[in-house]
Length: 188
Image (cartoon, rainbow, N blue to C red; front, side, top):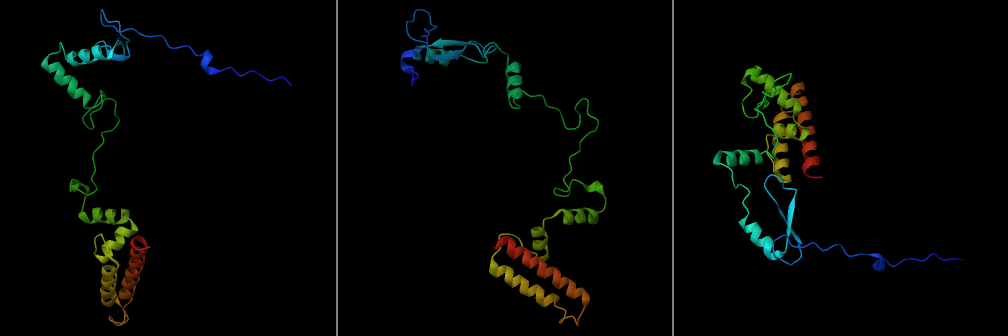
């Protein structure tokens, strides 16, 4: 059986070409790059360590710019060189978007009665938030505090206390469901 020769990678490799320092009169190797100008940041000078340090300490990105141009450049950099528009004024928009806070900050006063907004908030609240609202509690919860509040609500809404009232029975079912939700969510 004939075996294939495996060539040694060290013998085949050739050393990369050595780049000389771009500083006039320097015989060192150009291991460090520095940008050539503000306009062409992708073109570089290659310097030795000593000359790249002196070049970088003397290089000024804003050289030759007026104060207004510098300010404009800084403002443009705050948005990563991307165009921006005031809300709702972008050219070519078919509609003007409007910020809606859904009653969080009180800015949607023109949406109608507050009951409708409150109903919307109740519909979009999570089961845990609804249960917290029923118990009139705020996180963080303790198991002892939750049980104490549950006992209070059971005593208030128990049908035996209200003479067999069906509405009190329904309220007690809601309290029991809210208690089960909170206990499962906060104390697994």
